[in-house]
Amino acid sequence: MDGRSLIFDVAIIGGGTAGLFSASLLSEKKLKVLIIDHNNILGKKFSISGSGKCNITHRGKIQDLLQNYYEGVNFLKRSIYKFSNDDLLSFFSREGVSFYSDKNGKLFPENFSAKGLVNILIKKCEKNNVYINCDTEIKEIEKKNDFKITTGTKIFLSKKIIMATGGQSYSFTGSDGSGYKLAEMLGHRIVKPVPALCPLTVKNYIFDDLSGISINNIRISLKKNKKIYCEGDLLFTHENLSGPAVLDFSRYADKNDEISISFTEKKYYNIENESKNGESSVTNAIAKKTDLPKRFINKLVKQYSKKKWKSLSIKERKSVFDKISKMDFSVEGKSFSRAMVTRGGVSRNDIKSYSMESKKVSGLYFSGEIIDIDGKTGGYNIQAAFSTAFTAVNDIINKLQA
Ligand SMILES: Cc1cc2nc3c(=O)[nH]c(=O)nc-3n(C[C@H](O)[C@H](O)[C@H](O)COP(=O)(O)OP(=O)(O)OC[C@H]3O[C@@H](n4cnc5c(N)ncnc54)[C@H](O)[C@@H]3O)c2cc1C
Image 1: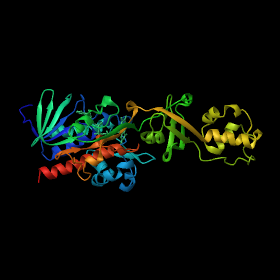
Image 2 (image 1 turned 180 degrees about the vertical axis):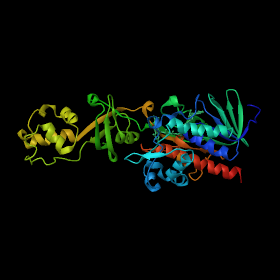
Image 3 (image 1 turned 90 degrees about the horizontal axis):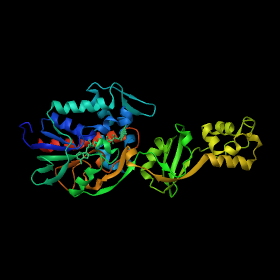
Image 4 (image 1 turned 30 degrees about the vertical axis):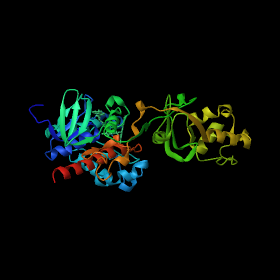
């Protein structure tokens, strides 16, 4: 322990996105901060975010941002107002980071990689003497006056704890779901964790040879409940359905669920007007009418593809439209190894939304993906990790420095 005391003001379990940000803020206030992480390096998931480019947050008003958190909107509201997308950008701007937005409003650092952002946070922690304990498994956490944290080799005491152990996906990054067990041991309910923001594997997949082809503005819904749907772009891969609309929708889909995808809204579009397209092949005529990729159309209407559109009867034309406009699939599965986030986690009902403090154990806080919150693709999950971390830190500073 380098001669330092074993007693800390705040122990942070998990040095990922939320944990590192919390430690950097708390240590600036001269508090004695400990990070315990069972991985060998910190911030691994953050450093691979956005394929290493880090889609850190999303452009737009706070009210619009909040619409992207499904059932977690009300829980997150105060945190996002306390620490918004603008606040997040300002925090890193002060460290020399500049940002750009893509055409959809996703924000990325311009002059730093995701790893570069992680290094900014780690340097702040090191500068302010945060005690970092990697490769450390926690055996037990007990609450007496202070918290007692027992690892394989050490016992730490701390006045407050922040649990920021993340979700259960991409387990090589360290967030492997073990944090849920610690939370459960301390009396919290866990909403069943399921993979989210992941591709969907479907039975009898026929689009492997269309890998890399995207279809814009599709609508994907659950057959049993059409009110549950997502809209956006779809991407065919070698083995599954992906792209933003599928990723956003994946949180709803379970194994064996029947799902329905509308590839175009142009039902029977211009079916009888043949002045322009009558001489075209069926594929070309349909591509012009719908903007769907020709290889996709060819695949589904192979038997007609060499025919002229005008040679088809109205009934046949309708049948061609039916084939290419909508398809049903049966979900074979989805996996944590390909999921960018976890739906589920520590129940929101067990956490005070204005402070992130546990309702079960005073002095214990949660932040980031360990909580039952998940956002759409677009920077919303990193934003939630920073905003909930800020809320917890704020409350702790107010209480410890009162
Ligand atoms: C491939 C990929 C790309 C992504 N891209 C984006 C993106 O561009 N934009 C976006 O908004 N979101 C993105 N996400 C999601 C985003 O990275 C996470 O939601 C966010 O990092 C969660 O932060 P966190 O602090 O809650 O957890 P994490 O960053 O996962 O940190 C958790 C930490 O806790 C440690 N830990 C876990 N269990 C224990 C334990 N029992 N004891 C001790 N330590 C423990 C882990 O080792 C880890 O260091 C992406 C995710 C993935 C997998």
